[in-house]
Amino acid sequence: MIRKSVISLLASSLLAGCVAGPDYAGPPEVFAANRNDGFVRAGGNVSDTEPELAEWWLLLNDPELTRLIEAALSDNPSLQAAQARIAQARASVRQEKAGRFPTLGTQATAIQGRLPGLDIQNSAPPSASAPVSPQGQADDSLSVYNLGLNANWELDFAGGTQRRIEAGNAQAAAAVANVEDAKVQLTAEVANAYVNLREAQFRAKAYRTECELQQQTLSLTYQRYQQGVLPLFPLGNANAELELLKSQLAEAEADTAVLLDALAILAGQIPGTTDEALKQIFDVPLPPEQVAVGDPSNLVARRPDIRAAERSLAAATARIGVAEAARFPKLSFMGILGLGGTSPDDLFDVSNPSILAIPQLQWNFLDFGRVDASVDQASAVRAEAVANYRKTVLSALQDAERALSRFSQQRSALVAFAQIKSQADGAADLDRQRFAGGVISRADLNRTLRKQQQAATDLVRGKAALTLSWIALQKSLGLGWQVQAKI
Image 1 (tube, rainbow, N blue to C red):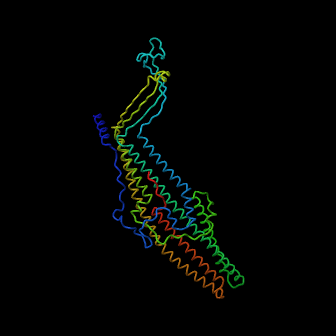
Image 2 (image 1 turned 180 degrees about the vertical axis):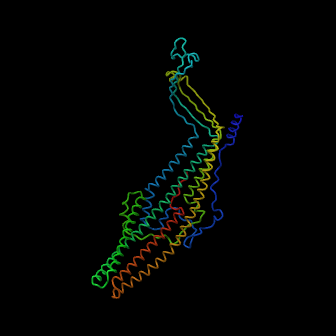
Image 3 (image 1 turned 90 degrees about the vertical axis):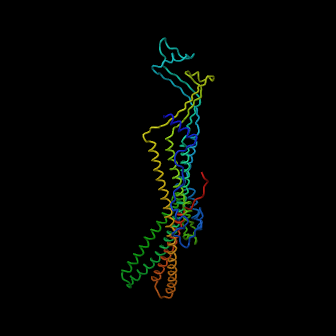
């Protein structure tokens, strides 16, 4: 009965080209009901035109930012580690593919043994070079010498090797997608640090100006206090304001140092190496007026983290087939071709080669549920991969909608900051004229000039917030990587 089952399985496998396990049918649909609709939070300043895939940072028109991002893409150690994982995955695929072919090697064997009860003298014809045993004594020693070639080959009836290759290819593609996602994350991180640096530098500059103005006010207040015109209380208030400004300046300078070090590390350099190149203060770069975002279906096809999750799902599906293949018999061959015998002299006797062929059929038809458990485990891993894929898609859509909402809000906020700055500039010009005419004091003018500086700081902070929201939008759209050759 068992023999008939084995023959039946082998015949069906050979004739039908059986490959165990389910074939991969693609990822599940997550938003099929509205796949042709655009983003819900898209405002009037965005279009459904497909955005440029790579080098979105060029739209900011900041050469220093471009230089930093190019350095990071070239020398960032985390990105290099992710790229090394691609080589690992591809080497694993080559290893699985090589497993389909026979192995051929050389071997040299020398066996010396004594097996009680074995009478080689009486069970085999004597050799001319074999030692002669004393009369009536059994020869129970064993000597074997062999030098030659050996070959091994296992036939893959159930397609387990093919499924392992499918899983390896999918995992290698996931590694490529992970590198592309690492580029998306890295470019956005560099741009965020750069924009925050420019904002911190301007903030520090504005606080220095405010400190100078407040120091003048404090000196004037002290003079009036000494003259008996003012009580001590205004002097204390003026000094407290100056100390507060100094603490804010120290915080801005600390932020600047931290961001300079962060940019150096992201570019794969030691802290301090970017200080000289970035010490000059420049304006915060602003995004373009019109922003292309495409639509959600293209977002799903483009984001590298979604493609990595999809390829991981394909690999998990293939591993079910690897587990299923263990149900089928395995047929392997081992062969030895060489020279040898019971004496070292036989190694040089080319007229009498030793040949050994060992076919082996193995079928674990009784394993007490081990294969079933392995298949169930692989199926559960695939179910987890399906859930992770859906979660990744939904998270990507949430990122895009949130970035679009914040980008639209920051545009409105920036308009308000610009109006406040314009009013502060007008008030400063008017008070300068009033001070020149002797209408107001230097302290009054300094208060107006400080408000002008505060309005300028708020405006720069608003510009930075707008640009950061635009960077977050580019990141949520999965931009910042180049298309690579397929595996």
